[in-house]
Image 1 (tube, rainbow, N blue to C red):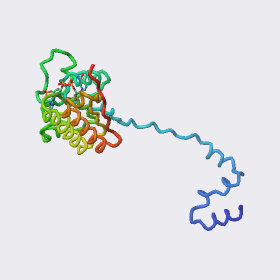
Image 2: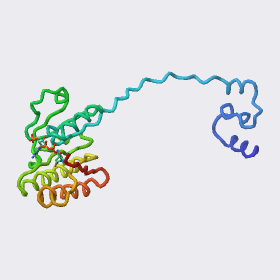
Image 3: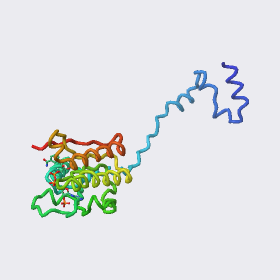
Image 4: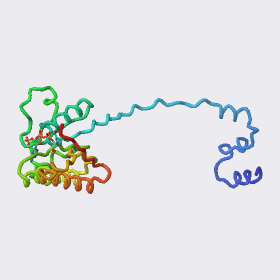
Length: 205
Ligand SMILES: NC(=O)c1ccc[n+]([C@@H]2O[C@H](COP(=O)([O-])OP(=O)(O)OC[C@H]3O[C@@H](n4cnc5c(N)ncnc54)[C@H](OP(=O)(O)O)[C@@H]3O)[C@@H](O)[C@H]2O)c1
């Protein structure tokens, strides 16, 4: 070992004073020791500007409605940036939470009107749905939400929560369009958001 290191040093073009063999074999001279024991010169770290991560932005579809307004309030309480999209925009509510929401006007049945509202959004909660004729119920609970799910997936939104409704035998038959619309949206959600989609079943109470 000793001879192979010595050969290595001899064959090196580096000057012997820089590649002293003493340091390898432990018989360093006092001057070598002084060199080794020299305290490290600690340089003061330069300050680094770390930008605070911006809070997540939640888009509530139908934030002015009965369920949507509660979702908005909860999300604001948790410190999220909250925006909403509904046809009439900001509701005429005299409540402090409503002033903290970014209100967008749009219609889920007109997909082009949704795209801008989905910019920089981390998650969407859809609270859009309703009752009427069977064809209307299918449209608002199904088609409208399918449009929103597709627009969110295209924009790369990570999570989508859809407020659906639990199924009750006879009522299910009477509200055929309503439940068929709900199931169609759930199927679309699970296909477009395999990991980040969540249908939530609200019961009427
Ligand atoms: N309330 C309950 O007890 C209950 C029970 C079970 C399930 N759910 C489900 O929960 C969801 C919300 O119910 P909710 O009672 O909160 O309804 P809601 O009070 O009637 O609210 C509906 C919201 O959707 C918006 N909206 C309606 N059509 C729209 C469209 N085409 N484009 C954009 N926004 C639209 C409305 O605002 P604009 O009119 O301004 O557009 C409103 O903000 C529904 O899917 C419902 O089926 C509710």
